[in-house]
Image (cartoon, rainbow, N blue to C red; front, side, top):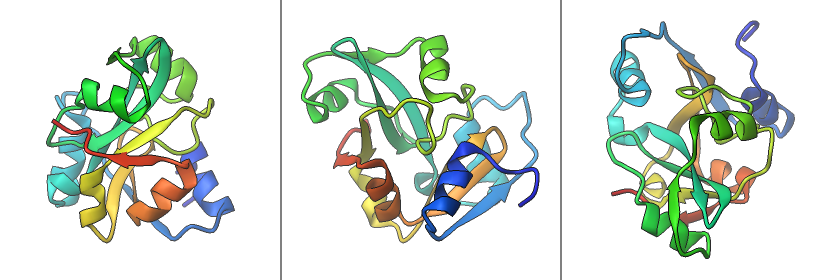
Length: 158
């Protein structure tokens, strides 16, 4: 795994969480990072999850949803105990997470933000999410992801 380490993979190694890292050559022309990962790695796209940073009542929160769907901002706000949500500015998301857009992992973020994982993740033995860099995915048990992040599970995908 030399040269592939990120804060996300370091956290998983430190916590001794079983996982697999999958690298692929990212195409900068790809319109959707998550769908590109699913296609290149030969995965069902509903098993690949994207990490989206939103602002709930003025505070940042993270939604983890399948790449095949969108983040339901109203549902995310409700899951976080808030009233209103909107997508965070890219610069704010990158600053808070320490990752670049298209490579934001829910794991190993610079600031600990509230995280909500879409309930569809429970339907799989393993799911994929960004490892913290474009072209790098982590495969892990969704229950490990939820436990490590102290995340909530809710229907937040539209």
